[in-house]
Image (cartoon, rainbow, N blue to C red; front, side, top):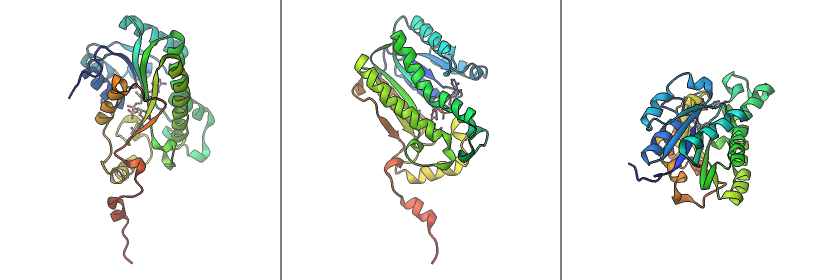
Amino acid sequence: MAYNLLKGKKGIIFGALDEKSIAWKTAQQCYNEGAELVLTNAPVALRMGEINKLAEACGNAPVIGADVTNMDDLKALFEKSMEHFGGKIDFILHSVGMGLNVRKGKEYTDLNYDWNHKTFDISSMSLHRILKTAWDLDALNEYGSVIALTYIAAQRVFPDYSEMADAKALLESITRTFGYYYGVKKKVRINTISQSPTKTTAGSGVKGFDNFISYAEKMSPLGNAPAEACANYISVLFSDLTRYVTMQNLFHDGGFSFTGVTEAVLESMTVEI
Ligand code: NAI
């Protein structure tokens, strides 16, 4: 269902890798809601070619490569996007994450710090880099909206999430602090959405992910929130209906974050005495 929530708005979507990606579903939803888009991902991800299908389905949106750790790439991305749109940008989705130690099987207590540094650069500092680029180019319209995706491991321990927990805590902190400055300067809103575990390429990289996803399903009164529902929520936060929401970490998790225990989990724990 579409409500024309984003009619006339222009946005950049980072991180659509394949059709499972949260960014992919968000791009589709934003397009359905009337937005014009630029799609971007790391040059190596663009070589897979999948994103071209999404671009076509989104009114032949331009696809512009940018490594989120490279300031020159980001500057070129914003300049080309403004040229394409013929003006400034209304929204940005940061849907980017990569845990190098997680991916290479290095435990949290035995991190390779070069990889750890790269993890933070890609997954967290990239948000600062994107915002700083937009700030310097004055690329965002008043009441622009920026969303980054995060996970509850930033607040509570989920051991296998490892270094990504620290990366998400930093991402959420940048959201608050830059949200302050950009709010004062330009009324730009910056929020994170803390999403349920979702079967995507990045999600599946976490050890024991399948068990974990069914645990979260049992622990959430509404069940795990699907990627499509996340895309809907993001569209609302990009719209003018949420102009005074900023610097928040917004849980989109079927109630998981505020549930102590559920009957479904208790039943699975039952022991005979
Ligand atoms: P995904 O694997 O589809 O998306 C991750 C994206 O990051 C990919 O498109 C990848 O190419 C991009 N990326 C990696 N390194 C990059 C770089 N140097 N420059 C530019 N882009 C780069 O997976 P998903 O799940 O859609 O992830 C999107 C966001 O959602 C991530 O921040 C993730 O941590 C977050 N998230 C995911 C959850 C899940 O269970 N899947 C739960 C909560 C948050």
